[in-house]
Length: 345
Ligand code: AMP
Ligand code: MG
Image (cartoon, rainbow, N blue to C red; front, side):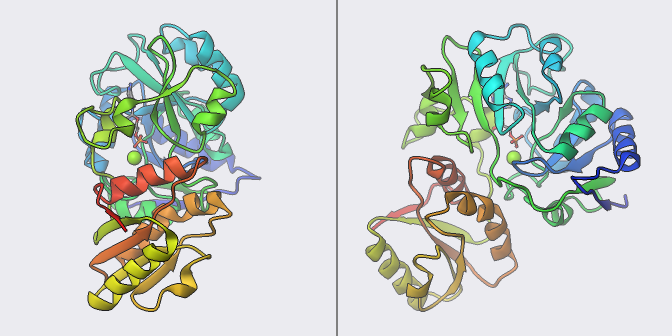
């Protein structure tokens, strides 16, 4: 299959291109498209034969459910049994945007789309290209990140092309994404909302809207005794080809540990920040952004992991990014990429 990449200008969306992309979705095909979080791989969410193609293209385990993307709030009640009060408040505050909510599903959502679960994950993205595509594609687009399963999520159309060339007919290229980390997932099927995946919308931001919100215990457990509630969170993910280790501790000690490793071992890559880059004297040093600008760190994370795949490195050491804001989401992705390998110094 030939994969076409078509540039779309967000300020002047080409109706002809969107109509063509919508037709592919309606006839059961796949289209990759930008959202504000990462690039998505879209299919008609209500057509199980179509959504199945997503699993095949990504090599995704069949028990890992898909997020259904909608373009207007009216679409929600057609696919979910009940919209709890907390969900109404959260949708008012954060939709369209990087928040996914989980509801009990109606019959019309195929079991395949939800990995056999009786619940469905729904999000309304804010990216204008994504919204136009959802409208053209019938209103319900299942779209996981458009990478091969296990690889870092794509934040540019080029990343999608690297993983999906020859596998899908069309990639809509809207340039680099705005956020660069996947959506925050909140489960609304229980007696209070629970965060199943941290994202751009932090626990603090959620608590400003609904007071009682908790983190899934499976996410914070240091050991694997409590499994995470989102099926996808148990898989190794975002992994670069080289082995990745996160180094935690006081910054001076972190720098000296990584410097020592880079001098002793061949093929070392280093993920550091603008504040620390000048202190590294060996290895291949890549700067992820400034600690004063958490958003830039989030935005460059996946791209930097992919960049290392093109370099001659066998082991990557990364500084750690604990912080009350975006730090939780950044560390969640980084730890998964590292297969939870941490060094305390
Ligand atoms: P991705 O589409 O790659 O961003 O992954 C979607 C994430 O949402 C995965 O971690 C899924 O396991 C999770 N997810 C999707 N639907 C549900 C659901 N109904 N219940 C719990 N987690 C879900
Ligand atoms: Mg993904």
